[in-house]
Image 1: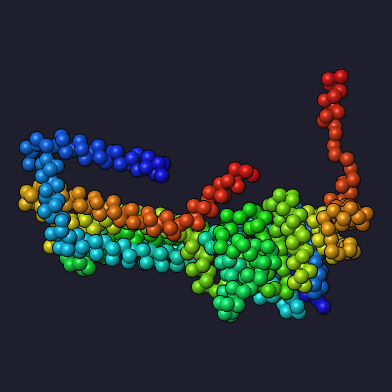
Image 2: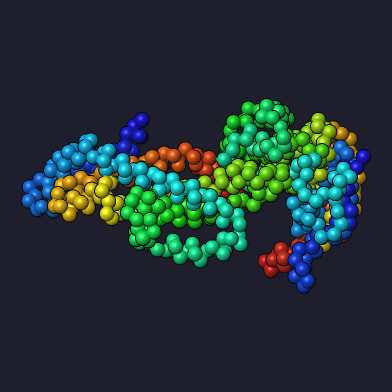
Length: 273
Length: 262
């Protein structure tokens, strides 16, 4: 069954001669329970796309559908994890307060809210930190709080906007595995935007590769790597290497294989010899 | 403990030196305007322990507290509205800028015309004068909310009430407190000043009346009392602020560390 369907979605900023087309007639779909990564060159309309999908921004043309229903505003079925946890978490609230906050909009009893928050924090391994404030935690832990906040909302679709862009490599690997685990345990559909090609191959069932602005779909790459995945074993597979090379070429074009320019050092050597 | 003790001595030595110096230098004074501190202390004891606490200090504090409370509530409420509502903010900006540019004591003469000489005039003057710093700082604070926090609130479909009370106002508290701190000083000033107009009680009245009737030691004792009141309300305010903005200090400290590391 289809979870998300994006049909001919376009978004243009401004009008007339100042118009900038960020997205042009973007079409792809995401099946229920699927893990789909969206990658593209930097500066392409990834964030615009996510804002349209989460209902924060209205598309200029075309539409996106969540479980058959047209997205025309923020929806209960969808939770968004932002790129910068330090800006989307509220520093005046405890970790628990942050996780409970979105549940206030839903008609839940206090007990039910607390229970859901506790479950979500347990899922990301932060049960012992519920009474801390976000700024008392490391960057990786803060992003886990943001993930817990999204999980407590019980969405059918989890949208993640380059969520691990600002953490160090080891924390990033841990968080990737955490998201994979959450995806498996909760049976949740994940749409994950990233600029990191390895990350996209490691995580997803399919990769939607985007073009430069105006952004459209270049290719949808199927990833048939076995699950569960593991940082070492998966990344050592020949298929992993093939896929990452393929995606890399899709994004960088043919110049990806050219060696880096060496003309200047060569000229330098010529002078001193 | 020793560090706290050292801090205490660091803060206390100058006041002690000033009072001591004043005491010894004024001891032989025969000037009617600068009586020996000993005489002033006697007057202070006669007036404020506890003869005039109920008749002059409490009415002053009531006016001050009520005026400041009205200013705080109105300033935060109106400031939130103007901060969120750009067309209205822009439409009212010239009027607000004009009114806030009028020196606070000048407002008192308008208030006398409008309201008369009673307590209501004093409370209104205090409230009006200390309203503007709260208003302007609240507007700034509300406008400065992190856009991503508002996006987050929208994506999670938080109601307007939750958005205002859980996100916008808490985010603006550092600025609001900065405004309140200015408002506190303004309120104290206008309190003392308004009581000098056709009053029958209050600290301002007491000081001016003592001066006009050549009870100079009484006048000095009133000024000292006013200073003590100002000091005390500031200390109370700082305690409240420390508590309310504990998250802000912690958050800023870690943000600075992260910035340094990056």
